[in-house]
Length: 206
Image (cartoon, rainbow, N blue to C red; front, top):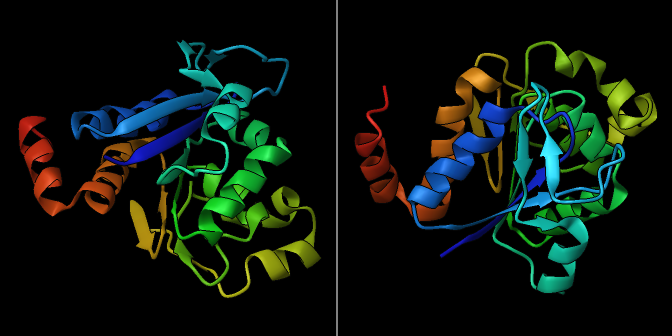
């Protein structure tokens, strides 16, 4: 069983966040919703970009205290605004993502999050990726300047027409409309093609 942590910050996009949670839990994986202490939010309740409030399983402090130095198998950052910006503003989350990538764990993000969050960490350097249309045009703003982008995104290739992109241990998704396909890419990566096929059939996917 794989352990997957989902970072939730105020302003996250609901479909993007919960589609992977749903499918990964159907696949019998250990999915942990973690609330980040940002934008005045310090408990487990987190409100989405469309005013839907979810109760996370743990706060970031509780989660990190529990796992210690044992990293999970995957980290997922949903998109949405200002959710993605709120994640990107929390340095411990960025450090956690970097550590996950360096230790060859799965790093995933969808919609705004690939460029607003992952680009700041250097995870996308040399990788193919996708994101919400047009977000890639503001990399300097999200990363902190052209000099930072030159290093953090060196060799990265934007794939604008792909609903999701798998490149090594990084999976990125385009947006809410691609959430199902993105989620299933995570299932296949972590659980295998046979499990993914069973879930696809059972949920009557297109």
